[in-house]
Length: 244
Length: 244
Image 1 (cartoon, rainbow over the protein chains, first blue to last red):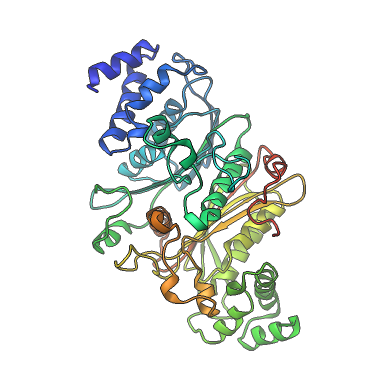
Image 2 (cartoon, rainbow over the protein chains, first blue to last red):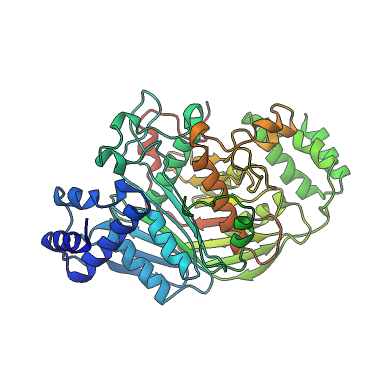
């Protein structure tokens, strides 16, 4: 998809220019990284969704040095995290800040936000809940794929970005018809219980911090004291988030 | 092992009464939960170790509403996290606090600390680095098993405690000769890269926050706004950390 088409389709959904641009950059980045389930297919998907207001603006409802709370206020989750990331870069914590985003869904590739923060020198940890699609074998679906993304700046210019969903496949890939819904189980094979424990644990963690029901996100932004990534990259292995 | 013997052996290593008691409670809790690699076998292991000063006291070197830094100061890691947890309960953050523990190793079962915090009403996330024992197949060992523990309080009395190591087996089990060192690879079978990405990501995250080289721990302590655990438990599945 060309930018002109993507932007036009997002604007046709009612998004303003800046928001359409931000969404396009997210989808285009996913597409470039081969994460097709988070890429252009999401524009098609958005065209089939309701439940978000393209004119809504996320609200920052609490604000302190070490804590911030946002409310999606009807905006689509991507734009809530975009706003929270922008704010964290403009007004970074001296040491650390927990940023809780209520009513924030869907949020796309969490590694995208972690990468923006880490590219600008901040350590970041991002997680989010999503509809319950994971359960024990034969049991009820009780947890989202609830990814954990970690971004760490590097003096060599390329941050380390780990972005791990607890599902064996992504919902995005199901939407893109690259995978079937049956394949969406906790990753890990016979050790599925480990990924499931992370999915349930992260979900309870996020849900416990929210003051409004609904899916949401939690982001930790911190100031680094050390620069461990160049040595890790120096081992010669491919680091998470590096090009294949 | 009976408490008398365990305490006597810990005291023989030079630990004072309160510290020996704290260590014994950790090892005994692990043993009761069937985590033998973190249980009494660690007393035998400590008897073979040097590099910690049983008389040392962890120091709190930075202190703010949303951030705290501790330095192990030569003390064994368990007692550094014990001290940081005690402090977090005595003087909890209004909303959230990131607690970075420099020179803090070994720390045992991270779920132990998450459970103490969650049992007293705090949301907790704990991670820590350890010697590099995980790598890609055939590649160098670059990451510790770097567990992630999550504790979430519950109004039904039993917190949710997820505690997931990124290794297919634990180093504790290797020490206890329950597993061979060859089995210590990232969990996940053919999706090993996901657990490996988490191990590398958590390691860089912890290392980037530390102002002193060496293994360490990071703990997030937060005030809950909601109570999601009873509904999760109500689905009838066994939650992470619940008795088998």
